[in-house]
Length: 280
Image 1 (cartoon, rainbow, N blue to C red):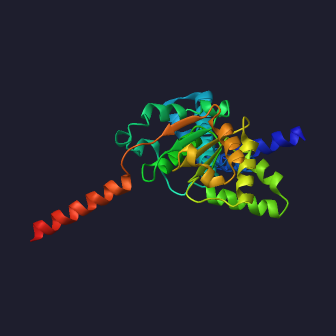
Image 2 (image 1 turned 180 degrees about the horizontal axis):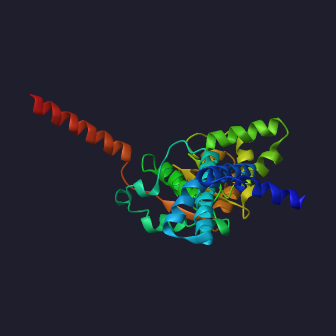
Image 3 (image 1 turned 30 degrees about the horizontal axis):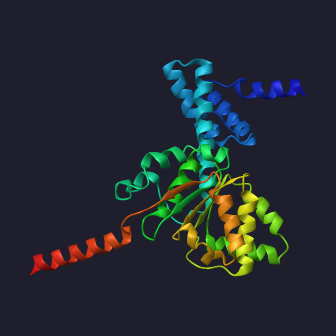
């Protein structure tokens, strides 16, 4: 079999001249690369070969340039897959957040968390503060930064998460769903506190957070201070047990200030009045 392979590799060059020989070799290389599932190499091998020849890179230089293309393409594909799996509702970035308007949350702290060290120790993160201060922006921005760093992230609103847990419980596949969540390094839970949960949903959410406790990280946003979390989950003992798990080794960021949306609304009104005054 090895002799037949040698013969087949030599065939394109035999009796051929110049460009025809090169075209045949390139076609064969494309066939091999496609069968090996190396699409970036197949796409770039021809142009890079000509560039390497012009620059005198030699065999190793050409091979290095070719492999760099494949590695870069795979990294890009993996990033796209992680971002798609995360299911972010919007594209928010930490670098676009106006930290100067919410000085209670230092930019350096968020950038430090975006390095992902807290994921190694499975610590939780909690963004606490009234509506309109950008908690969801920070949550998504942090999740996106961690996707870029190579971590697996999943976004869920608290209501959606509760519904998924209830459906799985009803269909007797709750352990499988919890195992699915554990595949992610970080689960983002947004808007915990905007709506109270029925007893079963509250108990299932408690089970979700308990399942991840010291095994994998969560990041949560809530508009309610911890003293009012009983309004969300109903039972005091369950709420106390949940808070104990979240606060233990948790990174708590309290947002204070004036609502972005309220500020933007005032600005739009002021601009409208200025436009009317100018036209008059």
